[in-house]
Length: 508
Image (cartoon, rainbow, N blue to C red):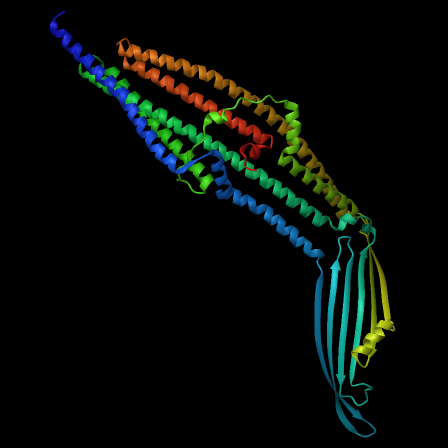
């Protein structure tokens, strides 16, 4: 072979050595700068998972909206208490009359002027047994210029006791307080639903948190892939200029670089979207960077051996949804019983007792009252019953169907919980086995990459083969990270399904 033929080959080998040196140095520098930058952010705003979730509980707008519902029910319950409050009413009236009169004996004409002032306070109260009581008191003062009147000032007082009592329905004392009871159940249901909503929001924040970490790792891998594609493209251009690579190889390298660039842009957009969603949930506004300080190794705990049936039975006792369903059944039971009572006739006792006195002074009037010289009373019994009773029968049918509906809902809920627990237990175990398998894959890909690096240095393979080995290793590491994220998410999902998410997160 001529001497001149070795010169291009030597130049090519030198160029390959320079490119290899650049390829080995650049990723390290870029990663170092990235670590240094992230270190600055980390030191300034590093947050643990627990701290992020605490910020969510304080700032999240959906949680604030959910917190309003129990307060509204509490207001309704307080308003219902007003039905049993003491009520004081006061009435004042003034009556003036000017009556002309003529004396036939003396032929004298005059006007009789009379003023009447009435003061009437009344105290009333309704009890939870349907009894309505009122104590009316009336004090009347009359003054007149009549010369024929035996007194100039007249005082008329009366004190009474009025009672209204349902008779038939009084055999069911809970009947009259059922509105207050059902509102109390509505309040408890709202509180339980609030806890469920808050747990759902925290669970959603957990998923966003881990998805954001995974998307960030995806960006890092695609950045490395883009850099490697760019180096491959430059290497191909140099080989093509030296006549060592065809135009097809150059175009293939160009296409691979463009695809890696497009993939990086998509990954960056996806990461930013997840980060904005997470910031919106944690700080109630997007665009705030959140740096996680959580070590995945601390969360990567081997799954515990569970007795499936015991977990299901305990979950049914612990889940807020089941407790809420029990409250709904109790409410529907009360309404159904009340609807049955409503079919009975309405029998009501109205009675009134009053004591009146008349004297020349207030003291004498009171004396007359105390003596009971002017007692009066009345008793009335009212009976009301629709002939066909369509309204009560229809309402009773509706309430019975509603009770059946609530019982069926609870039964369906318990079955769904059992299915959810079984799925989560299987998913947890499968994700753990996937992690163990992918750890072996990552170890193998790392060894493969080391071998390909040695072969590339010896000139046995091209940079395309080395780049492919690097991509395989990075992809295996990313899949391992995804498996860890899926496993940790399934752990928290199982805790949520068991009704113990806040306990595991330490947020109680």
